[in-house]
Length: 241
Image (cartoon, rainbow, N blue to C red; front, side):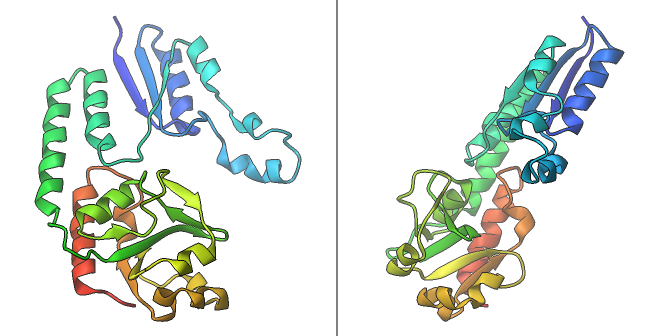
């Protein structure tokens, strides 16, 4: 049996590396992991699709999964929406690499760190809004790890009744809910907060923004316990901008 090669990431470089590895070692056991539904997707070609030069967005897939399977390179699509996905994928990757014990150790460490950073909920937890986008407004729902971090930090997601990771909402729906603060990823208040229509949201009008480091909150991973600690600190400070 040849060597075992595990490639994480299936945009363009990942599939290209897999094909190159197959050309180098015909006996290698190669597997590609990707979290998006499209493998080999060339984002740089979006301009051609938007300009009408490419009829279907699927045509931007330079090395689709079918071509990889033809070369005996299976593709495993993984989801990373929840905090529980981190230890699950750690165990999966470690098992595929023949290091199951390492995966179990990392999973136990992850839960231990998360639990140590979790705070007890208060009788009246603050209601926090998380926006993924502003035109149209897209709110983070209960299906996202961000909502789980909020809960562990002793706060409540304003749109926790949305089961999806995110979903479009109206500005009127936001204004009608009790929003104590708005979570902002980064150092500055978002530009949309200065627009007139957003002044109907009291938290925006009053400048009640909680700011956290963007790099800790982009996706669930081993740094999620650090993200939770940063969120707890920001909530405790009140951190209005």
